[in-house]
Length: 227
Image 1 (cartoon, rainbow, N blue to C red):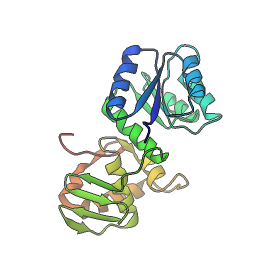
Image 2: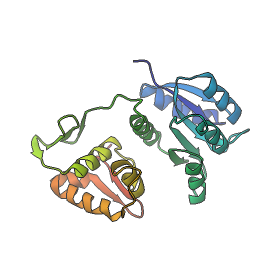
Image 3: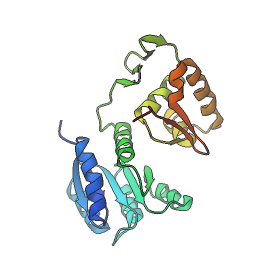
Image 4: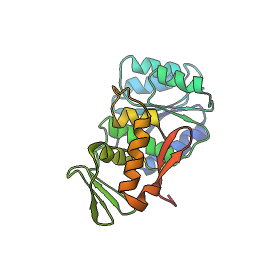
């Protein structure tokens, strides 16, 4: 299979190299742009670009404008990078169609994890049917979960929730994001539904439940110590 191509648009060459090196190490192909106009030119010239990483504060059309224009004709996943951390800036990014919003400074490994998750959701990556982490083995095809070789009975939503956590290791996930991805975007229920399911899931997977960390004021993170 040909390498999946990702466009990185940032006016800082150092940032493009940092992000690009991690993505290339992960097996992706990288295209670079140093401003908004170049980003749009490269995107329209190369139909194989599968995801965009856009810096908000670029010369020419900024990241918001580039995202808005791309969204007019494409559903390609978009991650916004910004030095701004205010909620209104993040909401603006989502308003113009961004899928993820990451504030600088950030961990390149977390960025790669989010790239992987977005591409999985958009079916650009061949989805792994088997997920493994510290003795937890989740098989999507068989719809089974084993803990240190012993099968554990989970409800459908508990299974989906655990799969989502394992696919997004070390990524802090808001309750809204979990609702949107596990309960689907058309679900408008109470976010406390998640807390109830997480409590039950932790109980069923025993000591491995400690890997599901509570991120106060936000949601949850599935994390294996030392990773």
